[in-house]
Image: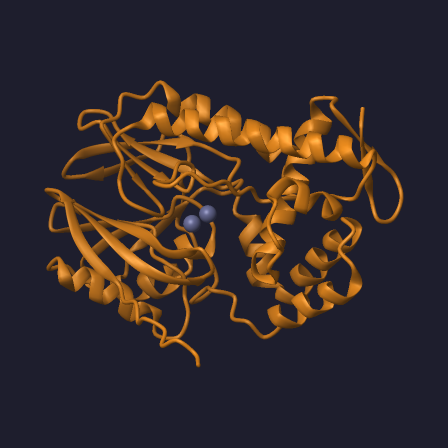
Length: 331
Ligand SMILES: [Zn+2]
Ligand SMILES: [Zn+2]
């Protein structure tokens, strides 16, 4: 008998005076929620991130805001930490309802390529998976599952301003500074409020440490991520408000935890490759992740493994052997 699925709804809570966490449900395995953040700003709010778009999803945001006495109409500015659909999917709907601007980092092609031409983007992902050694049968099954899936966006991404270092986001807590933190996504930024020692970290640092990197848009996303960890490591922060999970106080501990997990994964990729002698990225997955591959998460794990291999290649530790599919070997 099928278990009844627990109905999850948007929820709002005040974290500190003038800052509210809006917890919005996600339809993803292992990632049940994302956080949007409402920041008091004069007679309205700045909304940081806004959740994924799906049928009925705007009501989760409405409900979360309502629980803390707010409303979409109060949004004076929407800022997105990065162009992943769980952070900017409802941007068009919020812009329309609130009449507000959207600010996001300009390197958002990793999302807009997908939403502008979903068929081409899917074809490209299938080709990358094929080149990585994914067998044809599970690949076609995965691709079928993706076809006809909504793209998670309530409309085309239409930013009004580039959210880059030097830009400030004004709120009742003062100005938040933008730091570029690519790696998780090329468009990723974090927002730092120095006087109140607050950090809005998006998915760069999460409450529960987990890693993800967009593949194929920059030469070495893992290298970029490690460099971006350096840039937040020295910040004086008492509370970090992340894109998923609860706020946390120990920023240096989380930075170190992320570094350690990257080191561990790179070590696992090297060890799996040494055991195989040479292998495709797909053949390395069980050795690196030690779990039975689920179709829903295999694509994420493959993406990450490709990023680790490219980082090790940039470090001269592994070699790419030309051919189809691409095979890798220790240097
Ligand atoms: Zn993300
Ligand atoms: Zn996210």
